[in-house]
Image (tube, rainbow, N blue to C red; front, side, top):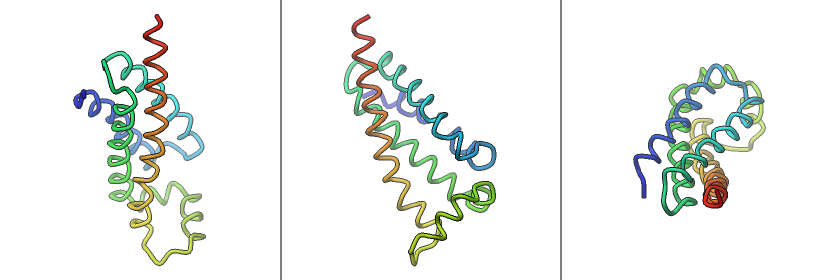
Length: 131
C-alpha cells in the first residue's frame, strides 16, 4: 500500500476544502470533484502496482477528514458563502447542532465518494494495463 501516494492525493481534498469555504460555489463543486477523481485515478493507476480500489477508497477517506475538519473550523465563513446549505440544514429535523451534523454526514459522504474513486482507480488501472 502506497501511503505516501494516498497522502499526496488527499492534498487535492485539502485544497478543495479550503477553496469551498469561500471561493468555490456549490454549483461548481461536483464538476471539480469529477476532475479531481479522474486525476487521482490516473495517478493511482500509474503509481500503484496493486490494490487500486483500496487506494482510491483511502484517498477519499483522507479527503473526508480534511473537508469535514476545515468546514467545521471555518463553519461561519462556510455558511455565509453557502446559503443553500443553511436552508437545507434548517429544514432537517435534528436536535443537533449544524457542526455536529457535518461531523456525522462527512464520513458517510467520504465512504460514498471512496467507492466512486475506488471504482475510477480500478477502471483506470485496467485501461492503462491494456496500453
